[in-house]
Length: 418
Image: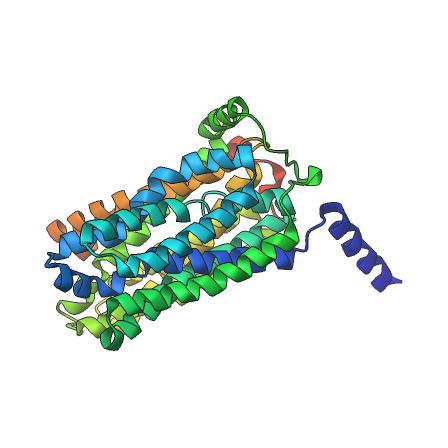
């Protein structure tokens, strides 16, 4: 009887939404791998690109920033577009467009042509991270969204790592163009899995989760206004902005920290620190359990505190402690990101979920750009300890923002443990 009651409860839950959470998680995980493998694939072959086109390192790095810049500019307009045409069509178009551009980029005849295609690819990729959290909130509801967002962030993390590895490991003997092609083929397979899974899920938002049918431009603008003023959403944007800024600032300076005294590692060995990203895949996938046990507020604050602890560990003079610090830092960051992005999607009102998701993603990549630049300047001028102090201050501000909203009662009871 107990089994029948539990089975019946689960069946009714599926009937109420028409969605299997596992299918949704597979779809967004595969889409995350596809999108972020493409976004960061050129990073390990920048020296080869620079050599072929006679570029300095700064100019060569535009092969990466052109795409992230295109994503940053496009993410909010595309999120608003999803209010008019639906979430799933935008995600599917994003996957198809970014993969097609990925197949063209390796045959770019000139560097300006490569940059134009990379910028367009960034615009195409924006349709996934800018819309996915809103799609998950509407398809699954507040109770299940944290786990699915964790799967999405895990896919993003693994995609970023696999894209770098697939390109870099094949470029030495096949060339950078072949390396990018191999990375794109990996994304093609993952995009195919995602599109098939999304086809099984469908597109229409569920009334049970507060979704609404695609609306008008005026409604989309009203949703944007609401997403810009609600304190609980602004707090999540601050976590994205400050958390990502701190994370990128530390990783941008990591190679310098590890190759300079007292460690003096070879550059190839120092680059292995990026394997710490694997911890991000683990921690983000646990986001749903964290929220279920501790609530959103405690989960975000705890994850940021873990991130801060990892940051402080990197001050050590022991290479083992420093590497462990990056692992802890990475785990804390991706857990905070998974919980906070899911929180923003759940708190957004019907008609404004796409805009809230877009604003969160905008804050995330703005933090990457600004935080990475400011952190590099701080490190160059004052050293690693000063950078750690600045990052700690940013993380404290993120905690204060979330705490202020929590204490004010602006958040719904879902941010508390169940």
